[in-house]
Each structure stands twice: as C-alpha cells, then as structure tokens.
Figure 1 (cartoon, rainbow, N blue to C red):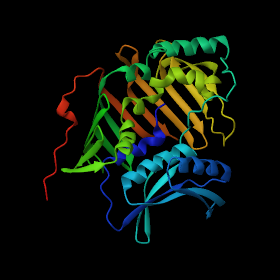
Figure 2 (tube, rainbow, N blue to C red):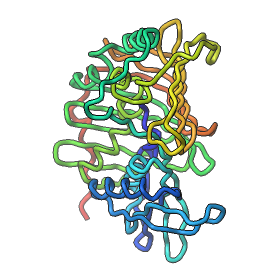
Figure 3 (cartoon, rainbow, N blue to C red):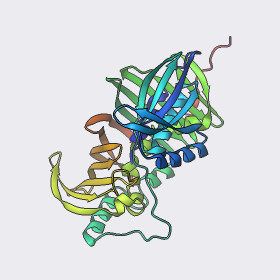
Figure 4 (cartoon, rainbow, N blue to C red):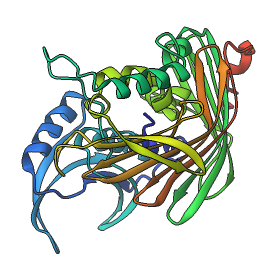
Length: 366
C-alpha cells in the first residue's frame, strides 16, 4: 500500500535547519481510548521515540488522551518521528514549531491503517470461489508471485522519475523527483517547481549520507536518511500495487473480501469487492476494491478507518519491467481532500547509473 500516513517524510528533506531558539514537538489527535495509546507508546519507545501519554481536557470532547513527544531541535527529525507515530497510533500526529511561548502547527502526518498479520495458528480464509478467482486474476495482472516488489528488489539498479503534488498550508507543492538506486547506494534529487519548499539532493554511499540544500552540503545520519529516502522509492510511493500479492493472503481486510457487484469507476467497468472492519475503533480497516473487468488491475482502493476515508485512484497502468506492473498516475484523497497526486515519468530497472552520481560537492573549507 501506498504509505499516505508517511507523506510527512517526503517533505522533510527540504526543511531548513531550525533556528537556535526554536524547538519542535509532536501531538497525536485526542482519543477516549487510553489503551490504544498505551500500546502505541510502548511500540514507540521500543523504536527509540521519546513519547508519553497525557490526559487533557479538549473543548467539545471532554477529557481525552494524547500521545506526545517533545524536545526536537530539528524539524527533519521531528518530521520522521511524526510519521512513525502516526503509523503506530493510527491517529493524526501534528508537528508543532515552538519559539519561546508560541507554538505553531507546521503540518500533520495522517493516521492510516497498518498492515496486520493473521492471528498465529489461524488458517487464512480463502473466501468463496468467485472471490479467489478474481484475486488470483488481479495478482497475475500485477506481476504474479515472483513479480511486484520481489522482482523490483532483484534488480541491481533502479531509476525512478516522477512528478508529485502535495498540498501544504493551503498551497500546492509541486516537485520533480529522480530516485536512483545502485546496490546499497542511493540518490534522490527533488526539484521544486512551485510552492513553499526547497529543492534538495540527498546521497547515501556506504557509511556516509549527505544532503545538499541551497548550495550547502550537510552530513546526515545514514540509517535515518535511508528511512526518509525509502518513502520516495517505488516501494514507498507504489506500495499497494507492488505488494498486492502478499496482501491477498496476509492482510485481514483482503482475506475477508466479498464480491458485492459491478459498476463503472471513472467510466470503466469494474468488479467491486468489499470487506468490513470490526467497528470504528478497530485496527482492521474496512476495504472497498474496484478492479477493471478488462485488465484486472485496481482502479480504486478505499480504506475506511477511525482516522477517516482514504481513497486511492490508479490509472495508466504499465509493465515497466517483466513482473513489475505499476500505475503511471496515482491520486490519493482523505475525506475528499487531496493528499497527493503522482505522475510517473519513467521507471527503469536495471538502469545505467554513472558512478559519480553518488558524490556531492565538498563544501569549501572555512
């Protein structure tokens, strides 16, 4: 699945360094359910996030619980942890910028469903025969058992070029991206065409990572930078189609799918499959899947969770390499509002990449 709850990561590379008197902190959306935050807090701490659960009176809601993390000096680091926290808690997590006594919300990482494994020892249900046949056809149309992310990971090198649009504080940020992978070496170029963001180049080579912003090269933590760059990779942006085959057998929402009828989606005849979540507070989302009856590739995927309705639209499918089938256009909305729009320009694997692509200019000596 695509990772819309991690969209915050994709903006963080262009963030400017925080001023000395500025700090950042995170807050989850308020909830009445302390238990789910207690669990998320434990998971966050095991992932080395400094979190705690607090009780607060919220106007219009009464006494609620929130998960917070404080003391960040870098907006980039806070942004990465905000996305992680949204994933662990399934709640929106807002990044705040604090300067003196003033606290201003910067942006929000949307909560979104986490892919769950079946209960240990429980056999995965296969559904009735029509469902299994449809899902088998969809799996084959998306590359089959050895295709998708498996075929992608077998490629020694990848070049992925695309245009993204992401709303930010009422303005669209539009940027061209070029992602390169050659073995363990990575490079990401982001060229902003419009909106309040900075262009950047990020390189990971061996035990070093660097980011070039506004002519200045700065070192970065390798593992954290690799996590951030992963969200710009095909596996991050096109996760759902690339991992569909594994979801059919492992994700509860997909295991429970049933055929509910046929309808036209964006003018194309589609078969509709649905599964229901286990209540508003369930970690298992409701799912509605529309697949084309012409080529058996998804046209719409809708997840209904306590955080809202996430809708993914896929179009212009292409087999860019044997077994690697991806949509060239993706649109994601949440409760009808745009989350991101993606236009894939090209995807090549294996790709010919110059060795000096992973070398950034050395900043002049002081």
